[in-house]
Length: 125
Image (cartoon, rainbow, N blue to C red; front, side, top):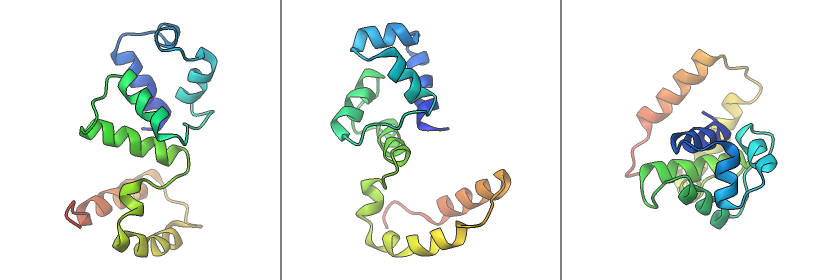
């Protein structure tokens, strides 16, 4: 799921139309629509993204909050802090990018890669 799809799903879960949500929270409907459709990237400002998360009903410190914040970073072409602060992981990123760069991964191959990465990742590392 893309960041835009996540935004839209969270808004819909609140049973709000795009216009209702934007009116309540002071957003421009055209710009919010572009975020939901992935036309515009999310803000690089963490405070802005955190405000959006709260407006969408997410609670700080929860897994949903963390997922939202990391998806926003990725959608704005930034690496999440959890990656940047992990020295061992940062050492492995060049090899990862070399592996996938220039390789056209199909949906099945991509899903297999994601599963393998998740299997080898432990939160304690």
